[in-house]
View 1 (tube, rainbow, N blue to C red):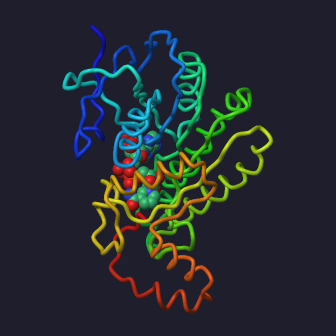
View 2: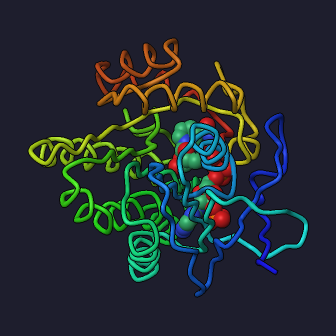
View 3: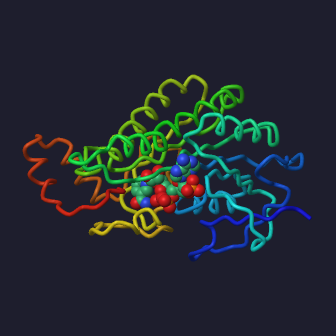
Length: 287
Ligand SMILES: NC(=O)c1ccc[n+]([C@@H]2O[C@H](COP(=O)([O-])OP(=O)(O)OC[C@H]3O[C@@H](n4cnc5c(N)ncnc54)[C@H](OP(=O)(O)O)[C@@H]3O)[C@@H](O)[C@H]2O)c1
């Protein structure tokens, strides 16, 4: 009997479905040789929130989907799905990332779409010790994406096609109070993704960076402060999928927040500080 796996992020919500992982195990065994010409999509952080929903979406669109996450666990609760391959992987560990990408290339022979979505958000107030928070957030949100892109780019260059996508954030636009680690990580992710877009054009590799505002996921459910213009998970994922399908270079949403962050970006520091500094008692930022 084939192994069964529990995919935590696919248990809840409107799009609940049984996840079929037939013959697509994690942890050593190989998937059956595939003769399918379906496109292959790798999504990091596919055990929860946006990543799990994106996995469902691209499965429905006929892709073979590889979902990465640290919480991929065995379970007998779910039946199996031939086009979803969940692999346990901590993106901040280079060897693990290279190992899973090698597995995918050996098994399925191609990579068409890679979404660097894995991310964490922790408060990093500057008046408390913060080195370990910066390390954790930057290692996941920035270095994790770097490892993933570094591992897949040789295959995309050989193919002379493919699409890299970074899930950044509107928090990349300017440093948010108590969220230096998260803002810095998303600003770095945006910058490195833009550089890659220019560098990889000669190889016909598309590169997109997406900056969502607040979307209802487990990450934002921990926030104990108002999140204006927060989108539902389905709305947020629709926007992201549209941007990916249209191969947009740079996308930010929703527009009222985009307008606000663009204005804040051109404000002088004193004006920015006086407006943004009023946001008191903010426990965490996950924009
Ligand atoms: N929700 C929002 O409002 C919002 C807005 C802008 C941008 N974003 C960005 O969107 C992305 C997804 O966020 P979300 O809201 O869907 O949060 P989420 O529900 O907390 O999901 C985060 C995902 O990242 C994975 N992850 C975290 N650390 C990892 C690691 N070291 N290795 C592999 N996977 C790791 C988690 O999987 P495991 O725990 O299984 O490893 C989980 O699947 C993040 O990059 C976030 O910054 C979110």
